[in-house]
Image (cartoon, rainbow, N blue to C red; front, side, top):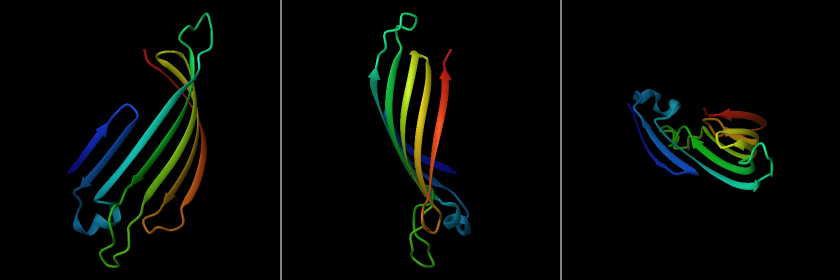
Length: 132
């Protein structure tokens, strides 16, 4: 059984979940989880293009965090980790209201269940979306 609660708005979302697991798997698989993200988008430029009167360029920042295994180990009392944090900077070109070309630069850090030093990564992402 999975139960969750969500608070949602146009620029952020937070969620928590409680997962019904067998007692011997709860500490390893994570019976309690939570996370959030926050998006901030700022219009940067509205080019004057005759063929694309609604075109605009936006910049954005996204912050996110998720903890897949909330709690402490029963045998040691030490905290369980298994979490991830990320920050994303984006530039988006919207030639029309339903189409976007987006370039993201993502910085992320992830810790394993035992809290060993975080693995850090970075990625460059290119996305294209259209709605019709």
